Image 1 (cartoon, rainbow, N blue to C red):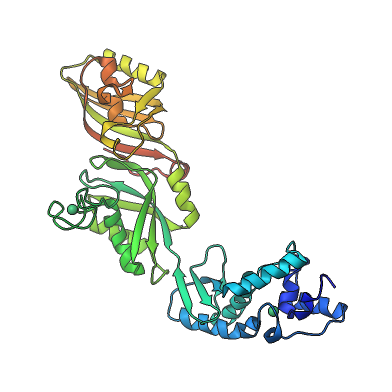
Image 2: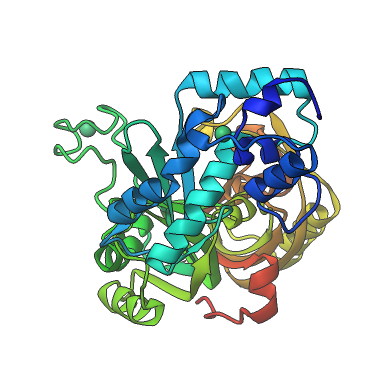
Length: 407
Ligand SMILES: [Zn+2]
Ligand SMILES: [Zn+2]
């Protein structure tokens, strides 16, 4: 038959698996039986199979172990994984090298699928190999089942009105999070963060063990985040329950953080979306209040704005972030810039820039590291009094985000 004697020592599962990729609508043991019968071969029971040595006789047993382990857990979908003695894999590879593996399927894949079918029947839940709520990994020798509970991902946008909190937890620089005198043994540089304020209700509702906030960029600690808000995905790690009421969480979160942080547009998200959020490069709008050492004529200021709009901005990594970002020059653009008010030596301006622009440096010049800058064009020291992000121009935010107007 297909190749040599060895196939005469395989059970229907293991025989059929050699041609698993040919034809649809059959399980491997059905394929195996068809081949065997058409070649007039003797049936080999799984227990006598030279490859699996009885593994396929134990499918029901494995399924029950998985079902028992999953009991009491909150999940809708699951995936099965399995661990084997390395000699099983070795035997399979030997057969492949003799018979070819072009149409073959690894034993793991068939076992996982067959156990999965049985677990579906026992639990009434469905398998999802791409995005399961939980993965049950069974050791086929010891019947031990380990669970990998997938994170829950919630998308939303946040506003930040508080100029004293960072976006995410910030480990103490001195002790690196272990706790020391400087951080009052909290391990943190700042006692609170947007992440900690936002996550509280989610942690309570899900019983998650840990969290991570994935933001579409971040604002400075002393900057407010206004307008249509900043997109984020809150990852809740190892949740105990996955059924949550986003609306009531949103309300409770906003009540508890009134005047500091607000969240909205919540919906469930996926792991894949985290990458989209992290890699997005939206333009952003800002309102900045700046101060000059002496009154500046309006015409002179508008003239400088014109120059900023027209030329690419070369920004060398600012001194203040040099410890965590590579020192190099990045080219950015000022898309829009306009004067909102000018009162002697204080002006409020609005501007829209390409993603990644260091706006404070664009104003004060960072000792010549940003060129051109408003300070350079005006030939004077310009300082930033206050800065707010008033718009994140990502796709989703532009479509339906009217948001809350900054003031
Ligand atoms: Zn077999
Ligand atoms: Zn410390």
